[in-house]
Length: 105
Image (cartoon, rainbow, N blue to C red; front, side):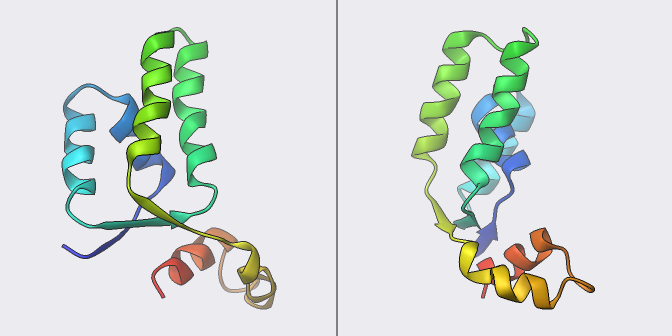
């Protein structure tokens, strides 16, 4: 399929949802080469943690989601080298959009 720039919200569903949405996310992610900004793991883990704190996710399932995330073949792109360019484009492009554009470059 090609390159897929993956977002933390999609990864959180893929590793933490045992239902149809999680299955669909896992199938879609298996179709391409995954790339993401370097903070994707931290942002992804915030979702199952929030679900665990709310009582919607068991502790064993939370632990499993961490292991599952570690197994996802995502190439993480460092954002620090892009900081000067983010500043230059601050009036036109958000930092998040800038990262996504440069991940695919």
